[in-house]
Length: 468
Image (cartoon, rainbow, N blue to C red; front, top):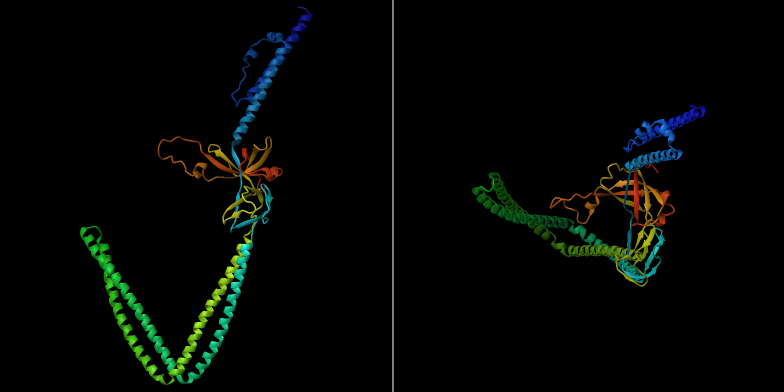
């Protein structure tokens, strides 16, 4: 064999050996990267081929084999990355923007005189929104003030009259004091005793009536329990309890009758003492009557003065209420936000509690309804990627705030009852509250409105840092 042929054969053998080693290395790498996906390349065909046959392959075929190996390697790496992503993320498109919606209504009735807002307008807390015609309430305030002034003057007159009456009664009492002090004390003591004994007698008599009524009830119960006991419907203990109650009531009635007799004896003695005191007072009876009349008049006028004071307090409360009702004519924003569902205009007659519009604060969050099979590893603080249908291609970030304590079906107006009839298992969904990161929605905050649809993806491996 010539030297040229020998060199050509050696060259082909070297190329075949290099191709064999390179192909073997590429296939070995593919097997290592694709072991999780069960993807394998059979290299036996290449290993069995002789260097001579490989040397006969054109460079074009070698290039194709290299491209196929590279594509397989990329596919394996992509599949591995995709599998890891799917295993560490949960997504749902059953999500929407949620937020507080504050209904604004009138607290008083009246005619709308000014409407200072428009649809979709942003307002601040405390800003005047609607004003009602206040003239009717101004009239009520004037009436309340007039009534207050009238009652205050009446109270002043009553107080002055009491002072004059007290002075007159005091002079009369001093005149008769030296003559009737002893008799007056005796009469007062006797009257007090009579009144106390009479009151005691009335109480004892009322108590006796109550005990007699109670005794009749116990007697009826005892007879009924006796029949039931004979029939075996109740225990002997129940019958004994009824018998004991009846016996106690009889003893209480007897004791009460003795107390009534004693009260009557006390009244008789007190009345006798009172008659003796009146006998002693016969010489100064006229003076005593005059002094008593003066004092009684003072007591009556004191009562009238107390009534006047209460009337003044009522008039003050009426005035404060009239002023408060007038202040309700100015309807202001309780919170900052945007106006929605405006349903009022100038000249409209509104009633208390009638809804005029709503205010939606710029504090929106997401409610995402995940399947129950998706929330096993979901925890508060995990990072969330959010896309909104209203802003295609725009990604927002947030974090899981909390998971609802029950599925959406349990909060339904008519929850499903699985204990009856045929059962069909349905995968339940659990609402998850997701809070936006303020920085990610800074430019879109005023356009993110409750009700917008969203798609969320929760990173189960990433947790929002505390304080962020």
